[in-house]
Length: 164
Image (cartoon, rainbow, N blue to C red; front, side, top):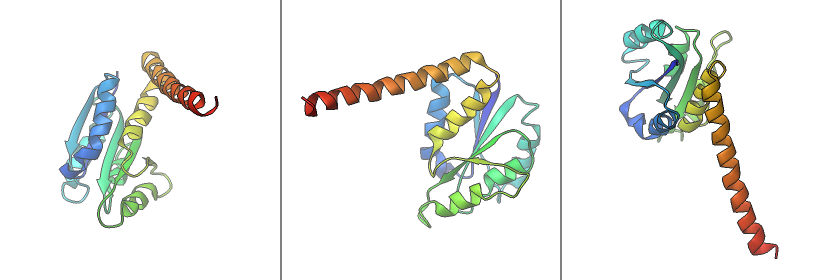
């Protein structure tokens, strides 16, 4: 099975990124987590990124706030799918990070989830791997069915209470 890399620009991003880590653990998908900055440790970012495919990675999640160039810096050095998580900061409530992550030039795509959307970043990475992994696809289908069942149970309770 392919691995997923999670790279965050600062350890202060960890409270958000932990939702991605937990999601990957729930699906028993191998992953690595690193703290590297596009601006302060660009050599480490590039060294990891250019060899990620050879090291068995199938997707990279990049979380960063403020200027949020990490996902773009990673995407510039690989053709692996890169998923950006814009992190909310006190500056512009994450809008700066969202725009920095989503506004990539043509030819260097970065899939971008919602501000602080770490769970969806992990689920998107899992869906990418599931294209070639039937067992993982089945686990994702089961998770969706479980989520739907929970909503339907809540609906039944509301209907019983108010539609008598």
